[in-house]
Image (tube, rainbow, N blue to C red):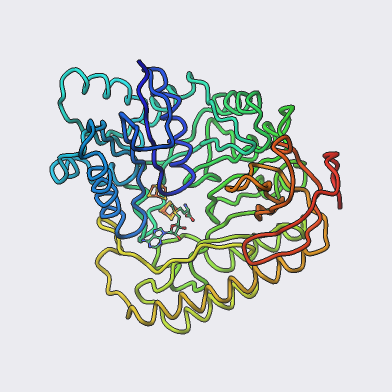
Length: 442
Ligand code: SAM
Ligand code: SF4
Ligand code: F3S
């Protein structure tokens, strides 16, 4: 009899990719996916540790499951992801409802761990960094994702050790998957109907395997018949090498949006963060790319209120935002993470950081609203990705990744349509299809 698994995913796109691959794996031992967690025999939580309260969020979630399953058979409860890696055995000690704890580089072992648990009922935490074996295993298993836009992890881990960040501890050292493994997986995604491939890595542009770089992968993947669009995320400014910048001159399918986190507009703060790049480096990348294609847009991440951030540092961040006019950005107040260099630094006043966050978001949101407004009455190429939640319209994304909603039908999904924008707000464009000939419109 088949068993049902419910997977809930927090955190970044890499966790989403992992959740899909975990599902491809557990299918082999008879699990089927369910969207209704109350009918699950196995409840798997794929967790994120990037900011505070991450751990508490997991225990809270488990508390909710426990309550709802009170009168039913207890599901097998698995904690995966970055909190699993960081907390390991501690989670089993603190919450007896949890059965298994599996870190991000051990997912290839998940079937054996589940089967052993079913036999011996012995709780296990598995948090070894075994990235090569994980991807060797995944590469032998077909990636079943059949979305119009699919993720493909090409690189994991990080050696940069920014002073605020847990990723080097939860994902381990930098590792780049073999080139051929990636091309084969891209082919299989296209066979499943994928039109857009988003290459992923915590430092995706640090990709380096046997001298193959991200630029080589981009140019090879765009040759695959059926691929219409390629994106990559998340990049580090230090790894925006000449070859990668040059790709924008030649590539026909690389989308003109770069998510390039800068974190702060102040060189002093960047140095305190151990970011290994300056504002000058960032602006020169921006200028070079704009020179190649003025349509290229930037999005970014900001940390507000990092220890030592003065009013002057903050004003420099505002100035940078006004200059680059980011199309979209994520901004959060600095959150001290256990085990990182910045964990014990003196925090700046909470009221001040909250005010600064508000100011920064106002500036970012204003840019976004203006950019979206300027698209009204223009026509855009939109990849139709899905029906909207209420199933009455179609949801897609522009070349700059902005959400576009329009009247359409299920059969539009997977097509690149020409859509005229009629209305906009900060987050979304609303339009109408003017043809579906897949032709590029200026
Ligand atoms: N590798 C990417 C880079 O270097 O830009 C970032 C990856 S990290 C998973 C995503 C974002 O989380 C970071 O860009 C940063 O803005 C944010 N972040 C990480 N640690 C944080 C912390 N301790 N407090 C607040 N935000 C944090
Ligand atoms: Fe974290 Fe810095 Fe590595 Fe990005 S580069 S994952 S922010 S340590
Ligand atoms: Fe979170 Fe881990 Fe991604 S900490 S942001 S799930 S790499």
